[in-house]
Length: 277
Ligand SMILES: [Zn+2]
Image (tube, rainbow, N blue to C red; front, side, top):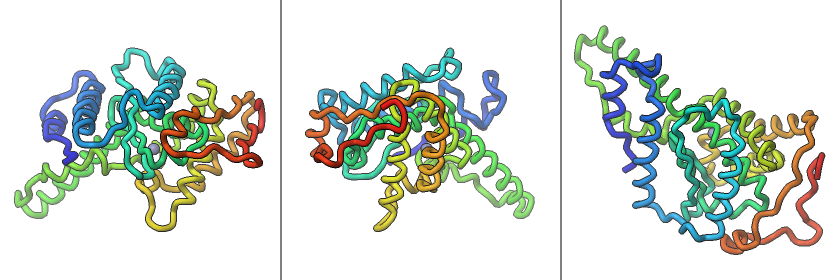
């Protein structure tokens, strides 16, 4: 269903690159097209919450604020088309498509009580897009496959067929390298703070994921391993951060109500930030 069409493979194999040095690496325009095509498919096949749903309004407001605070050097002359949507399914997951579309599952969103937690996930996913992590993974994967093909050809003298169909899952199955994940956490943290969100929200999200470990790892956890270690890294960085960190913000009441999420009861108020809040 969610298939990467063979044109990407053909492009990578046939077209010698003019715009970018690595012929296996999808161009920025390719990434946008791929992401937009897949987003159209998701709109047809998945239960997306409507534009006027309070949760969608809130998510987009947070997303737009983050996008406005991406370091300008990362955004100069870039074609990214950021879009924020919610798939109404009880899954603990969120993901980004190449070129800009970002999806939250309502199952994950409904567990969040602060905008900072939401911003933690969005900031992280935004960095996957602007730093083109998917394209890097795709190129590395292609090169490994090509290397394997060459080896197999030497051994079996032409008895191999390059399996285009097996590339089809690349859009969702590649996963990101540990380096990419750390980069997304690090830069996502800075974008959050610049946009006025408290990075404790990012740590809390990874702690939430770590706590979900029993009874089947949620999707986001499978593609984002080491949640506990990453939460610890973020908390360590907060402790060492000399900046005045923004106060934490509760989510909009209407959005919480729409998702059936209850506000913290008296006595479990959102604790103030270590600094500045
Ligand atoms: Zn990630």
